[in-house]
Length: 70
Image (cartoon, rainbow, N blue to C red; front, side, top):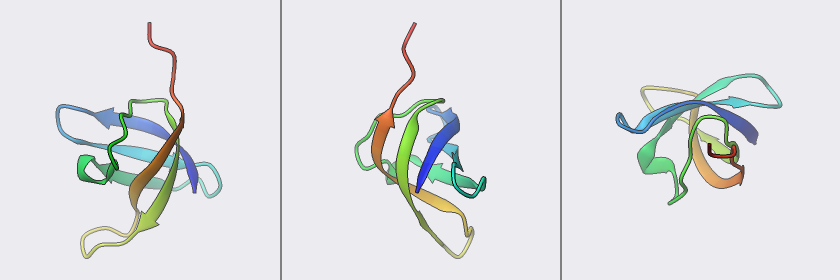
């Protein structure tokens, strides 16, 4: 699935991705980043998975495009 990181709180270790195809919001935890560095605005390829607490969880496989840093 492809999406855009809408919010990422580095100090808290979590954020959210909006999926391009279905518009759903997916929760992302820092433990599921697969070694990637992300920030708000990054375009990513991710996989969806479910836990007992949440249905819409994301694990990052690749950062496709990152916003330019100022």
